[in-house]
Image (tube, rainbow, N blue to C red; front, side):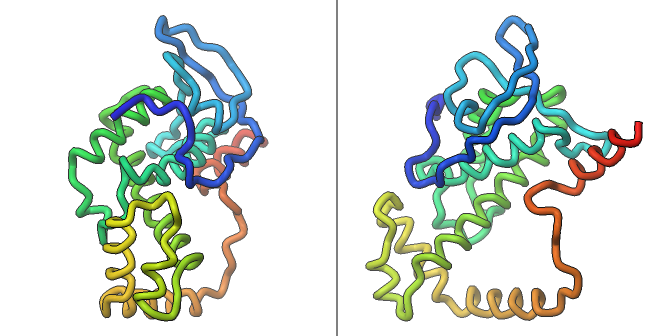
Length: 207
């Protein structure tokens, strides 16, 4: 897999906001910089240092930047096809290739320990993407949905994806999800910030 230098074409425009993070070069020199998600894509021989808490969860601005960038990476259909019904069924070699790309953009203090969490998060971003694609492009019938393929989604991937969405298994899963969401009494009000980052911010304020 090549060292990608630009966001995937179909991905949404990354927010212009910048995150205060530490950046490490090939010689181990570290500088504090304000970096946007788009700038991470264009980085060559420099990586964003990701901070973790004691539970192994990304925190601070570096954790937010990593999460945002992984969402952008999920739109790379050549690396991460959408025609797998479950992230667990994505071939191991694809996840390994994705991990190599991630490590070219982000520096981890202990890659072996951090890999499981990061790859799992990428899987969630890919799942979210598939749900968004279906909400935006689904039609009343399978045939109409096949025709509504987004231009940059490979035809074979879209065909498999649509057929899966019209399967009885997928329909029953959506019904269960709708039923589960209807039982939620307390709305999620943290926005995109993870609980780990929010907790770290609160602790930092009281120091």
